[in-house]
Image (tube, rainbow, N blue to C red; front, side, top):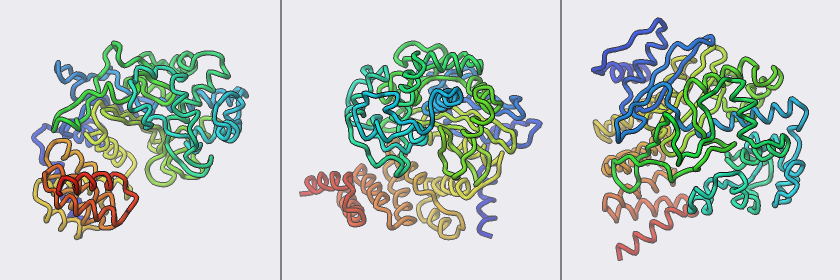
Length: 477
C-alpha cells in the first residue's frame, strides 16, 4: 500500500500541468516529451534515436538569457567530460595499431615526467580507469586561484601536478581526476608526433562526420554556442555566467563544445565499429567487473543493463551520451545550467522510461517529491511521508536541494530541508554541517553553533565545521 500510495502521488503530480500534452507514435517518447515540457527552468537540448534513426529532437530554454536568444537543436553546448570519450577512443586506436599497450607506463612516452613513482608505476590502463593516484590539478589551489588564461595548453598545466605527490598508491582505489586524461593526451601527442586536437579531428571527428565539435577557446566567439549559467553564491536567486569558473579551453579531459547531432554521430560511429574494430569497441563498452567506470566509459542501470556512455558536468554545464544497447536507443542530453536544474530529472526519467526502474531511480524521484512536499506542505508532512514509505531518501540529492535554497536566499526553506536530512540521516556529520550553515545564513547563531558542534562530535576532522564554528564562537562572544 505504501508503494501504491507513492505512485499515485507521482501520477497526480505529473498530471497537474496546464501544458497541452504532446503525442508521438511511441508511448515512451510521448511520456518523455511531456515530462521534459513539464520541467520548470530546464535549458538545453535532447536527442533520442532508436535503431539508428532519430525519433525525438528538441531544444529548451535560452542560449543567451540577456538577449532572450533561445536554444535550438543546432546550438553548441559545453560537453564537459564527454571529451574523455574521445581521448579514450584515440588511445584504443593506437593500441589497435600496436603503438602502445595498456600496461605501458607513463615513463615510456614521457621519460622526463617529474614524479618518478608516477613515471615508473602508473600505466595507460590506470589512467583510463582513474586509478592512478595522481593529484587533482583541477581542484588545486594553484589552478583555482590563478587566471585560467594561463592554462590554454597541456604543457601549461604540468606544474600543477607533475611535482606533486600521489594521493594514493597506483591501483589502490578509484578517484576521478582530469589529470589522468591530460596525461593521456600528452601520450597521444608523443606517439603520433601531431597535436592532440589535430589527431582527434582526423581520426574521430572526421570519421564520425562531426562538423560542429571542437576544443574552442571559450573567451573567443563560438558560432551558435550557448552561454553557461549557474546559481550565484554571492547574489541570491541570480544566475551567474561561468566563464571564470573552469578551463578557458577544451582539453583531452573535456571542456570542448558540440551539439546533439554531432554527439549522436559519435555514439553511432562508436557502437557500429567505425572508430575501432569489434574487439576494441567491446573492450570499451563491456565492463567485466561491473564497476560504474571502465576504460573511459561509464555504466548505468541495473547489473548487465547494457547502458553505457559518458557524462560530464560543471558549473552551468551538463552533458551525456548514452547507448541503451538492449533496447537499441541512443540518448544525447545537453544543458547550459547546473545539473540539478533539470538535467538529472531528464536523465533519470529517460532512463526509467526506456529501460525500467531501479532502486537508485526510485530513490531519486522519491527524494525529489519529498523535497517538494517539504517546501510546499511543510517539514512535518515530509517527515510523515518518509516514515511511511518503503523508498529511501538520497542524501546527496536532498542536500543539493537545500543548498539550492541557500543560493536562492530562501534560508528558512533550506533549514527545513536540512532538518529533514538530519532526521533521516542522524549519524551524518555533513547533515549537521549543512544545517549549521543554513542557520548561520538566517542569522540564528546559537542554533548554527549547536549544529556545527554536533557535526564535529560525529567527525572531529570536519575542517569546514571547525572553521565555521570558530568564526561563530568569536561572533557570539
